[in-house]
Image (cartoon, rainbow, N blue to C red; front, side):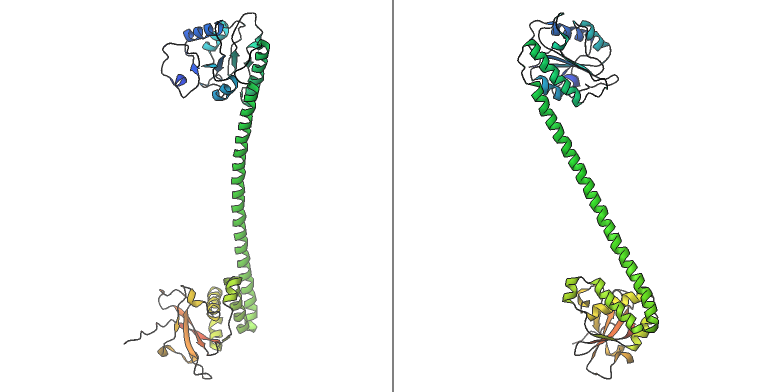
Length: 354
């Protein structure tokens, strides 16, 4: 157990159970500490820590110091200033700790002793980090050898254990930092890839639109069929295209003429709807409405005189809840061929009554 200097210590943070040292606060306390250092009957180490000028805490971690000096050592702290100067005046060699330095006094302090028998740790840089703990460990081991005393713990072995813990903690911290940097880099990479794919898609659409404009002047039907193929390829994955191949279809002359007057954006949407109709994927798309065209909504181009058995259908270009959404009108022949016949308003199918 550490030696308790004062019979009645004030209840301050420096001497509560959550901090493993005693705080020296007055000159009478310094006098008692000096008497303890010079006590010939003392058997335990006395360790005195100081603060850097202007600070109120020990410059070294007290728990690290405790690991090196052993559990029975008495550890005291006094702030740098008049109290630390007072202790230095009372020490036999007038060498007390000051401005962040620390000193360990072995038992048997005398005026004739060698200074290294009571090692002092001083860092001229004022850092007081791992290098200071190493200086304490090796200085304390040398002092024990000079006095031919057996230490309670091997100070050098204790310091090496502290270094291993410190290096492990630093490695874990660095690893966590690198993992965060890697995750951030992956996010940036994925975002860049998405941006690249989007830019490539827009460029492809722009090139396709320019090509469609040039081709459309000479072959508007071929340009629209090429656009339908492109929308099928872009909208479906490889597995989806295997399940929904682009079926046979033809474009009626009225349908081609209607498509020529549309803007690029609307024509692109029209090609997408035609592709979904031709590959029979409309039923799985909630944004599109498909239904038989009511008989009273048939236009002349909705009927095929060459095959009266073809059924007339319609598919909306916009959401079902839009007011009078335009629709693609087409004929479904018994063999499965689709003939896109024209464009018109979406006709709500009549409900069958009983």
